[in-house]
Length: 168
Image (tube, rainbow, N blue to C red; front, top):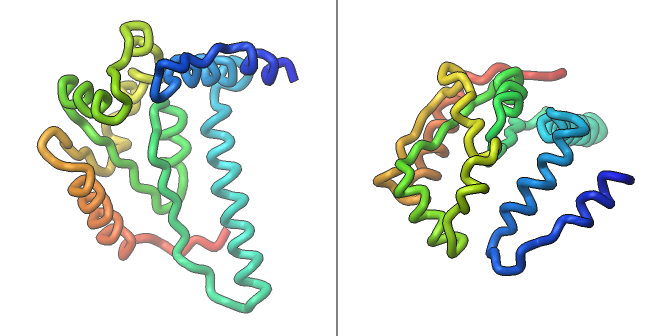
């Protein structure tokens, strides 16, 4: 309950399109209680969803479907590790130059990161994820979001043929 009060007490800057400072502060509060809270919750939700799918298939006497989860924002090494530890995982990294990233933030949010936001751990920890964990690194400076999505789709479609059946 204390955490809820702490979160409630944080101001949200109404001038920001995306309340990044608020989100960073809330994340810090949560990680202070459990450093891996978001990775643990992600694992819990993935496993819960799979159990529900399996139960439904068992009730209806159906084969288990190909089950795929896409996690769109991994920043911390332990989040990436949780994915890498899963069967049939793929881990993508999208790289762009700082100027391209700033242009994209400006287009999306109407502002770039403040100097305080930019040095926050969640904005920089992706660089601590071991490079060998990534199945694909996609350079995005010169491609659109639609082209990025198409590349990912094609990589997943190609990889699915090599996935092993998981019944656990």
